[in-house]
Image (cartoon, rainbow, N blue to C red; front, side):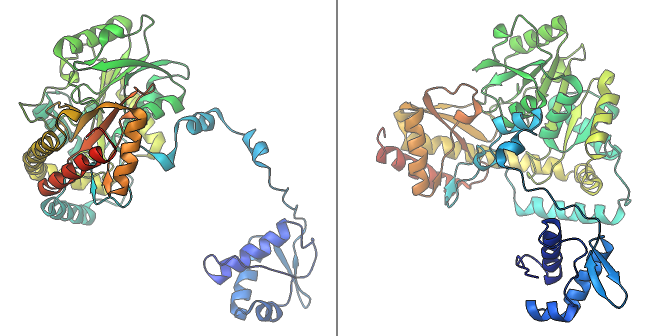
Length: 480
């Protein structure tokens, strides 16, 4: 019997896989005797104990039958596996979901991924962290691991965390709600996915901002929604362009639009709420970067103006702490509460209990608020350094859209089209500088070149050096 071990993992597992493959492929027929353990061990240069253990596993799984005094044989009946289907044949079995997923998602080219080898990177979406945060969070997590009951979490979420979240958004974002209306989720992305499942049927229309965060777009599209893009300007969503045929859902980031940074004006907020009321549609409010504003107090959330229960309000702890903490929250109208809780239970039973308890303690003892104050001060300094560096090094060759909020700037490159912008990004990568295009966030990308320039993950000194290098790259590829 010829066997080829694949070299992956322990020898016993390799031998089991090789023997199974020989049987299932039909190379070894039913009723054929397996080699004696000593002979096979010698043939493969492995210990006899390894062969004995592999044979025992094959007998337990029904591939082998032992006969007293005669040896071990291929069990009967075993039907050999059919030849592997060719790719075209496998494609015939694709579901609608797989087709939609493949049409919109390219994991290898996700926008915003850090440029490999970059010494300086204007990567956005990366929050500010420091040793004080790490130390405080470690203490909270250790305490939680000791005292959290080892049972399944509730789908609704940890009661202490829901209470802390409702108090936080009332104080910081002007959203008054009961802890019962707060559901703890695994970040904004799960919130979007749950909302699509609860509120949309395949084929329903969903308005999205143009440009829009790609993951929101993907969640809606893969669910089967019909996407209706509505343009963004300096006052946010152009509510006058909302369709005459009302959608089922409208997705907005009114406090700091991603990626443009636009702040939705009060008249447009009121117009949007009136539209939703008149047309009986829902609003998904992603309060992206709503905590950080540098010229004044942050504007209250759209949900704070909602008197008709049309807004599903979503926030994330990941954006202000660290992305690996997959915790966020949804505030749902009471009429939808039970449906969202049921959908959350079906999805994953509930978010991790230990991390929920740790975050509840982190918020209760003041660590969270201290971190926000410290972060806001640091981000303000870093934003100022980036603005100064860009204006000094790049001057009239760029146009900065400064929203006075968030953790990134939108920078348009004057006199450069999209192709020239991509050439600049590629050249910067050779100089160990990470630059990131705005184009992937459009359904219909503009021909002008725009960059998203994050400042949350670099020090003031690093930002100065990165701005200098950016200016050099502009000159080296023309236009600087």
